Image (cartoon, rainbow, N blue to C red; front, side):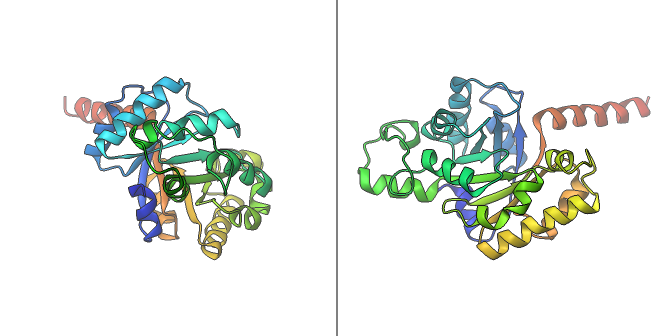
Length: 255
């Protein structure tokens, strides 16, 4: 089982970041040096080709860091390709119903859980020749599937989504959630905080991992304290810009 999923199953906290612009596969080694547990390749808002995603996953596997790929939509090819390339799992945006969650499993899981196409001697198996029956079962257990709750409809359907076999995590997208609730950008608004708290409560009831993405350290620490365990902090763009800005401010203040 991938280290990320194993750590979460044992009650641990994992912290990653979102990558949407940088394409150099060696970024994986930099993130390991920084102490991140995983990173998310954002193919919803980013513009990565399948080849680039595959190259970045290969480097990450060599560096010993887990990769989650955020796909653009629920579609067979979008789901299968990153998994065949060896991604630890997927982050799926705008999942509003249990039917959508089940459709994801159809493409992400091998029979009997789903109907994922079988190509065993690929990057995900390190080009080995595994026993088919054993490997399909192992892959189904190891593949991490997180679905995003980003709308009032998703919040309303949390119970049925969390009950869908194969859903490992319900992940809050605070920005989109705030927009869909009519309070754009107000991620500390009482309505938003109530919705996020409901995600944590429902996940606890169904033994599903609650997750969230945020760039504010103090706000994120607060949600970790309330039970968030699959945590994405900031992004390649924000970390680069923030580090540069803070360093230049300090440099110019000293002149």
